[in-house]
Length: 119
Image (cartoon, rainbow, N blue to C red; front, side):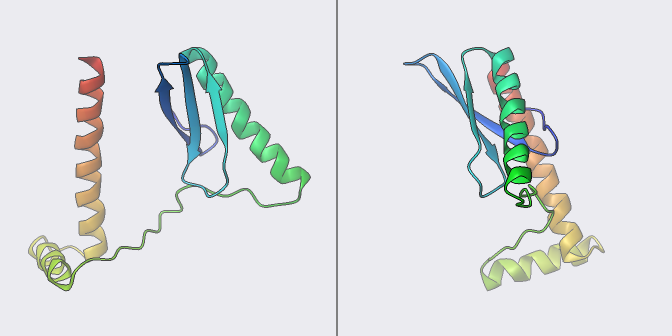
C-alpha cells in the first residue's frame, strides 16, 4: 500500500469473511482498518490515519512518527567482523554498507513479491 501522510499500512485478506484487514505499521499505537474492496480499503486506511491524527490532536499527544531512519542491530561478533571487512573492501563506512546492502535486499524482495502476486 502506498504511504499516506508518512504512514504505511499492511493488509491481510480473510477469505472466510471476504474482507481485507489492515494495520498501520512502524508505530506502537494500534491503528487498524478494514474493507471489502480494494478501493474501500484505501479510503479506510486514509480515514484511519486521519482519525489517529485527530485523536492525537484532541488528546494533545504527539502522533508517533513511523520509520525514524534509526535502526539498532545485534549480531554475532563473527558477523560483525565480516561486515566491517566487507565495508572496508568497498571503501564504505559500516553504516553505508549496511544501508546499501539492505536496500538491495529489500528491492529484490519487493520485486519478487510483486512478481509472485502478478502470477
